[in-house]
Length: 138
Image 1 (cartoon, rainbow, N blue to C red):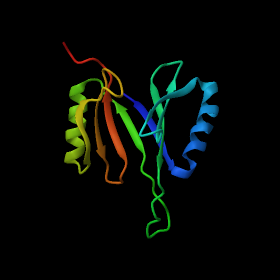
Image 2: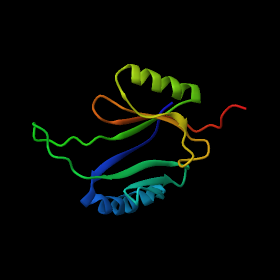
Image 3: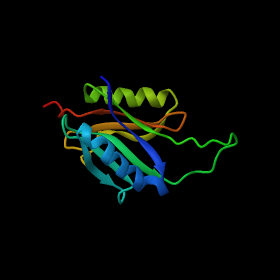
């Protein structure tokens, strides 16, 4: 399985410009605005040729720079899973390896009727997900 979806986090003051940029830049590739969450602070771009939202632009207030003078902005990456059991196994393995829970395995109907995902925060602060988009077994 491969990457299911990914995205970037931009400062709140640049979010609108970033969304407009990606709307224009990705249009020739068949992308259009798909979903919005949190009053437009999270925007998903859909691949209209292949189907599905796989690129996200999220607004986040810039945090103060760390001791090294560089801002580290966490990102989100979702890995495709072949079934729901694999999503559950990913979650258990990630937590056992030191990740923090960011959403236990389960359905996420607001993302799609068959969407089943689990979220963890990795040791570097990134939001990592495993997702299965197949209907549950009968």
